[in-house]
Length: 365
Image 1: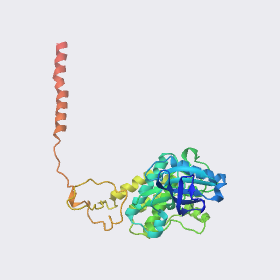
Image 2: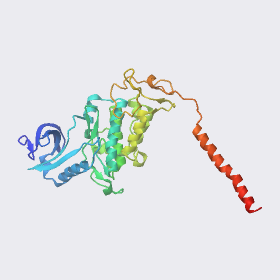
Image 3: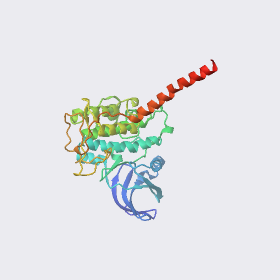
Image 4: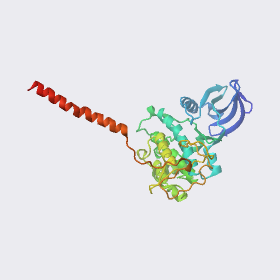
């Protein structure tokens, strides 16, 4: 590979930025369009394997048909001598697994902000008829401005090709993150991706995976039959409602989870922007603005920043709101238009009674 620095007379390899068991990813320059791209090259050991070649082509094809801000865009797929490669957009950042290892436990706001974006990307794939089947933080790239993009659709399945009763002796996916049905060799579904998203949420909130073992067989067994430790036991700062959401997503039965990533994303957005505690309190996170700034309506913060909610603490009030935009309850006012329309309707209906009485008496004196 060291000798080959230009692929297809167009892509100049600059430096390796990642590697896996079957492929190496490079930062490259597209000399034709003069832009930086990522270039994933299948390792030579697998270039002659028709099965791996088909998976590699499937990854490019599946992702190329998806256009979403939270999915890495595929630009090209090609061959150059013995090299097979995929060209996709360059994300200036790191994969989520590296961030978890570096940072450890994430705050509630950061965890929600990242997972809501992941749900948006995966949910779009579900609506397009695809199950990712390999959701894990290694396959999520996070840019420096905290934007997340899902990548690696190498084992994605089209929903139309999945039979609910199918069984396989070969289990695809990552043992720490795949769902119980995948661990048993069963048919995947969008709910399988939801389970994997739940594992990632658990890991970000607690700095631990729900199941850990020394081999893949034991991990598969634990996903199928073991109950994860409630996350609040590991991180008491997690709200009870968020713990309930996380444990629901990690249910053994697909029907007990949220059915699609879109559903999970909506639940997390609702929780993150309007936190309903069991006490009935409604706590709105404070919005920091410069003094005398024009009042703006609140918008859902999909991409929270570390400092924005650092000092947020629940207080014993039913509503919290900014002093700049206090919304006090208004006293009831009379809706004159409604009263006027009602009066006209009353007059129209009952005013016809004398008219029809006159007609009746005129016809039947």
